[in-house]
Image (cartoon, rainbow, N blue to C red):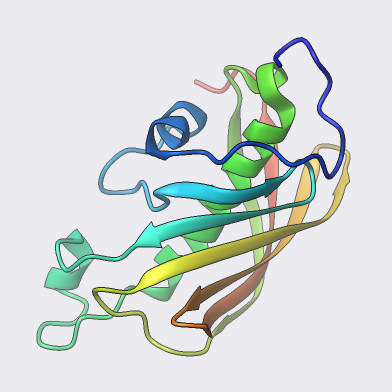
Length: 159
């Protein structure tokens, strides 16, 4: 499918953990998305993050009351959006990185604790002059935990 042009809204195959590793430069402990289970090219994607007690931040956030830091939930939404961009661009994304440019309107509604499975829902609001603006939310057990809008830029040939 690399030679075919991907159409806006086209359903793309799920991205497993190995696909995430190919799409993102992030590695442990900063890789915060395990895979994408729904992808509509250039429109929306749903990432999954299985939150385990083994996450390094639980050691200090907070001892006796482990809570996933909200900024890392927003980062997980950003990584989901980056995989969506790379999957949508296909071969054209080769060698490029996706960087946050803004985070706005972040709201932290409820804590995320070990054992949660985060559903990271991102939706492209617009794309202009190389800037991709998304609306995202993280849901666990059917309840919204975090919401934010954020922008990203695809940087060609990033080192």
